[in-house]
Image: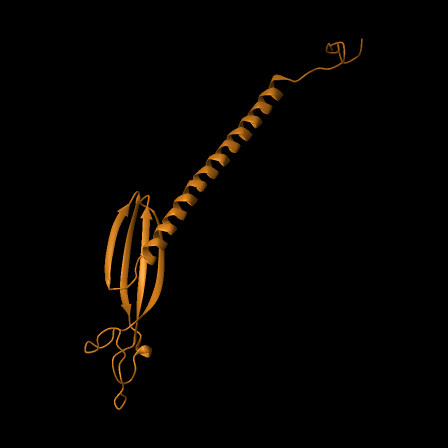
Length: 151
């Protein structure tokens, strides 16, 4: 016998095993790691869906900008699927394109397309397009105009 009292009993190999407290701590750490991993995957899936929605909205906005062949001032809005789009076309003043004598030869239009979805999400594309001015009404389209003194 020793002075400190009897020694605890050990098994045949000398291992004492894990205590209940060690097992509970290990399970708590494992549980937190599993929950964190599952939340990270769920966040990744949400971001993937949002990215897909954003890409579809950008493609729709690009399509609606390209649909404008001959710009005219105005505003349109419609819904396609779960996307709502709005297209605004307006004439941009450009005094530098107006000659000193006579009507302007060119006009600049600004086309803005806004696509929204999910009440808080939206994308916007803005572009400008230069359009030649129409010929004077006295000249039929397609016929060349002759300057004075030319035959």
